[in-house]
Image 1 (cartoon, helix red, strand yellow):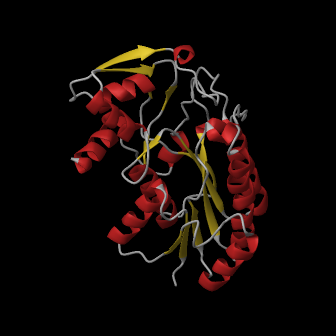
Image 2: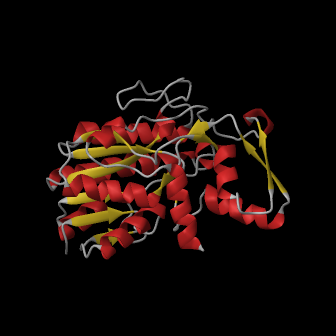
Length: 280
């Protein structure tokens, strides 16, 4: 047993977090969906009673944005709302601290500037609505919590935009990528490091927004990913590349609160370079 419990242990962030904790010799208990179904309150309570954690890194989530609009809509809400309520209530009962990972999709993407942590939310797709519901549950149920909004996540241990671009570049001479959606990429390593930093430095509880520094369009992100590849990357508009779920057009979240804690995120270009170096 340990003081730390991780949900979504085999997901993109959960796996990154486990490797980071392993590298620092920090003990933890980690469970995937088969080992602890967060939508089952009894199963969650049983695990929490056995582990009695002090810190919960709640990395389990449903993140398939387009399926969340229709065929997976119920699952999206069961995991992101009901599952989060079960974890939050068990965490509060244990007197523990909870980390909840949220998203830039809680905003509508119409803001010309950066979204501050206290900016009005207005999600426009089912995924964003369910994640905002999770935020509200955590804030209402928990005494000790960190709600961390992030965006455009990439990392070694799951499907993401970087892997998709590199795979497509192997089979195509030309790729088209939208250039009218702007945001901040986030390396899972940076996100995991901030979560651990928050614990080790006992930063104030509350809402935070964490990505790598700087911003770009998806087109600019793709160009940087493939800059050493023999492929022509061309910009297109969102109208030319329709998707089922609404995507925020301008979802740059302010990093000021994170930086005020003393944590300095890498630029997204530096993070991407480090990540690709590890892959190679």
